Amino acid sequence: MDPGLVDDSHLYLQATHRSQSIWDTSSTVVLSCRRREAASQRTIPFDQLIAPYLEAAGFLGVSQVGFMQLDWHLITALVERWRPETYTFHMPCGECTITLQDVAVQLGLPVDGEPLTGSLRYNWMLICNDYLGVVPPDMKGQRLSLPWLAEQFEELPPDTDIVSVQRYARAYIMQLIVGFLFVDKSNTLVHCMFLQFLFDFDQAGTYTWGAATLAWLYRELCRASNAQSLEIAGPLMLLQSGVQAASEQSGNMLLIYRWTFDRLSRSQINWTPYTPDIMASLPVRCQSGQAVWTYIGPLICFHLVEKHQPDRVLRQFNMLQTPPTISYTNQRLHQIDLRGKHGQDWRRIHAEHIGVLNSRYDFRVEAPTTSEPTVSENYFVLYRSITRRFITQEGAFYHCMYDFVDEVQTFSVEHDIEALGQICDRTTERVDHIIQQTR
Image (cartoon, rainbow, N blue to C red; front, side):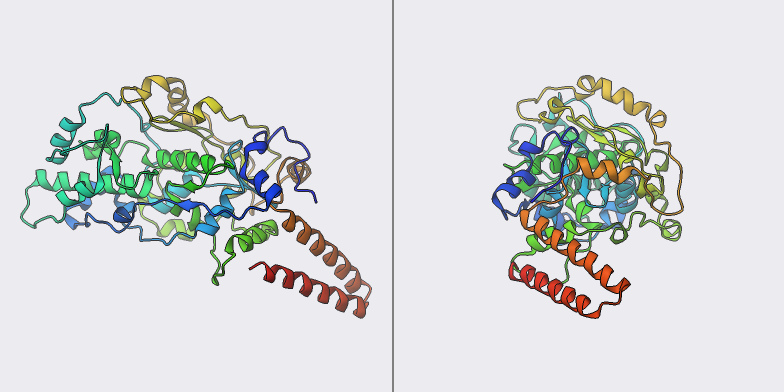
């Protein structure tokens, strides 16, 4: 059985990708999806008094997003098709991905503005005292306890002064930031680096919280796509919100999702879900930043630098998709994390990438628009030679059988050979039965 990938110059990290391990071993390992339950349940409750401050800082939209039950099997199946070389999901019908447009529309976060990065050389105890009005009794390096923070802001009395309301708003935003958007693998600790941007709420709204959120998700996807990874964190609601989960659950949902993606056709993807009518009904915050929705270049979140490549998914913008070019991922950047880097000034370290981001209007996609999602004539000729179409050997086998049956059925219909058509129907039923046995 052949998984595809005739030309490996595009997907050059295949040897360490989890799809290679799955093909070789038929692994059914499901990724653990990390989230902070306290934050997802809004331990620090929303109060209408803080709404103006959340709006100014760009977080009112996120505060209104409801709880979403994560489907670990679905997310795992998506990660298996995520490629860190291209920052896209490789489906049989082409590439697709989460873009700045998705972040803006779904979360209402600002995606056009100043990069979210800076120095870690602060007295964080002093910052906590000035911004929150409380000092943590014990800090783990540059992190404070999320349960402790929630205990300090259990409720907001109606006669509270403005300073206290602002402090409460900052604590609530920190809960959203570290518990909903920038989720990491720590269950109870919160990094203080984001707090430095929340003194002035109007100024906070000028930063690209949405772009930073997308950078965080990209990094988590890239890490999780490695064959050795067992978990994934980040804003996973963005990953799941655009995919229809199965209505029926069984013990082997991962296999079912794999099979579904193996057979995914162009018509089964809603490439442009944000219709003019939908966009017109959304708040202004969800429509802002359209000038950079097709920006090609780095996304920055402190130490993270990840690539936004809408040129590979132009069908999502009603533009003509041409064959993709080779995309090189900077492995040095991909290995950077915060461990042991308490005094770094990331604005200085990433100055080159910030320079590109500051010229973002000069790095936007230019392509012919189309009335419906369209690819050029030669797109699939190249794409099918450089993509990994199948994740498992079973998937490749089932696909070959279905293709054969489809071809014979077409022949039988055209030549009105009823008996042959019936045989093909029975064969298809047998294949379906085999699939059902894997559930």
